[in-house]
Length: 280
Image (cartoon, rainbow, N blue to C red; front, top):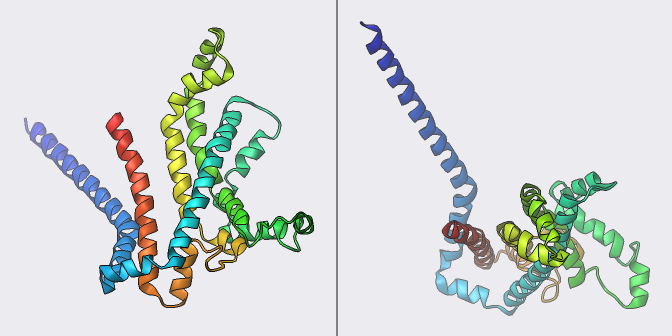
């Protein structure tokens, strides 16, 4: 007769313990995210507003800043267009075809995650610099890659390579080939099959890949610093402007530019997630 109350008490203690454990885990996760994300953003806002909104406008309206942001956007757009096409093609080939060297290529795609972006810029310099592997040939052809915008585009393409492929590859593998084969038996061409059957299933992975690639291109620093040289007014991107401003103790300008970049990337990532949740 006394066993049931003891069991109820024991179950109640277990439920209480599980509830406390879940809450503690949630508090830990929120605190972890706050320290890594919210605290730096708050510090940027505080630093940018230290001299008022007028100082932010004055700092961001400088011709060098406008040029730096314009160059950053130009590079990011080119990188997104290239990876949007060729990243999708690479993911398609890896998902649909098995060939010798496939595993090697699949592994090399993640190389930008493992290699420092500074090292990536230096490697490009060894290839395309004046004394690099192709330097003499490029000089004869009148083509300048190192310490110019083309080299910065190549560097940004390298560091942002994995995002599109890694977003699309699992989606393609999960999607399978049955619907594509059915479309082919009905007379659809390869392009028609991809556009009307495959791409709708890839849509959100494709958009996420574009957004992550764009955000990564906006924030690239090390590789473009080495290969571009950070020439003020020529090869200085927004991140390089921030670096120069901090070095010259122009803290308001640095904080303001960093805040704009950070908020823009945040809006991109959260915006695409919000749109997806509304549609689904």
